[in-house]
Length: 88
Image (cartoon, rainbow, N blue to C red; front, top):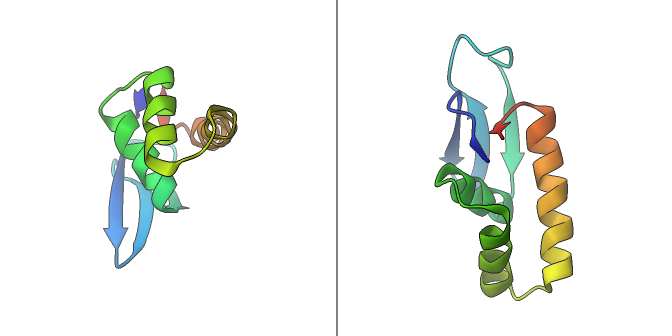
């Protein structure tokens, strides 16, 4: 699983935005605001890490349980899939 090449992460001030960067995408005007954790996960997906390795990184970085990390990550993935930001 990885980020669709038509999308990029941009930081504007202290805000993070996933934005479509290709004129050929069906979502050519799509912007999704991300919090710090969402931006962190987006970056992990850019480097094509697998699900379990991202969960491990999240539990180490954010001091959350594995169950909480999986729940949050799954919700994030659902949103990204809905907007075709992730390629499987």
